[in-house]
Length: 484
Image (cartoon, rainbow, N blue to C red):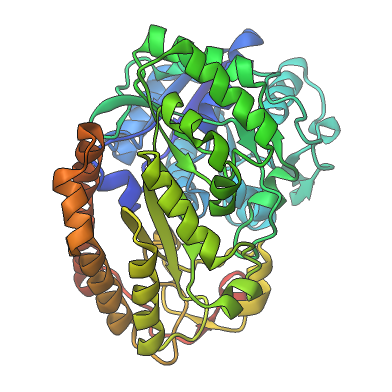
């Protein structure tokens, strides 16, 4: 079959403000096994430019695909865009089959099939094997009922098959890296870059995160095979930056260390960035030199909140002392730390915001990323806040950079001004400025300057969006009512 993979245009700050784009790993992962099965596969990354709907439809008409497969890493905020785009495509090409996958469609399959007649099939959960079996069923004329992990209409009503089994061997299917041809994906200051996974899943039960539910269990790739694949990307595609998409790559220290050692042995000039748990950094203190030798330049650490009671309620395992120790250990080994902090987990006051600032200053991270609590229906956290009112009903903006939950003690404009003030203080404090201009490693100075430039653009953009573009709802809508 002729298959077209579409990464839809997205409005999030991450997609539009950085001026750089990373390849859609999810779609490339679907494309690899489909190519190997003999199908003609093409990638249309409409988020790269971004493209207008008319331009996308023109490309679809040019490709004349038998089926279109759509997905986006920000699947919650991307779904309204997918709904509008697929409606236009179907009106022009009524015979084309349209498939959608991702985290949001996995859990909202019934709602999507009821509301959007243009979407024919939804892939639920991991897509490599499910998409492959779906296309094979269409090619052979088999009924879709026998394919696990699907949702579609049966007798005019939404219907789902049994869940697909967890993909135990992450090396079973290859990533279709050749689909990147024609796109110059960059990150970290216009360096050619890709997204990659060492593992899938997370063994921790944080209530606000659905990763452990979506991926079911933590698994990892073969350390040597992944190191070989990274070497190939560096040699054949000129890749300089590897961005790890793992929720927690170091859950099994033996496997993680084996990967680091395999990559260090190759002596590649790479820049690696990713996310990791602070307590794992502390745990790995005796081999953090391997992190640095492998090429890691920055880790994102989920700090989330200053209040121990809040952290316990959202089941964020960890300790403040270990968070601080992890940042210090990374600094000692020449690796930047980015602390993520989330506002909106409770009925915060000005005192709480001040305490948040004090905590961040005490942590002394190299960079900060301040976010807003964004509950998803499939997470346990949703049950905690389902009766709370929301102030933003535009699903396209549910990207963690917009306030969603109504705070009763503070007005939304007060919250955003305080958050923006915290960012200014964190970025202009003497220690941060000293590292920005005088850090002993030139490449880390360059990395911090790159992030600072983006941060300035995002800072002004967020304020402009909040006060002049975003329309907060005046209706009294609870979270439960919004998600029906």
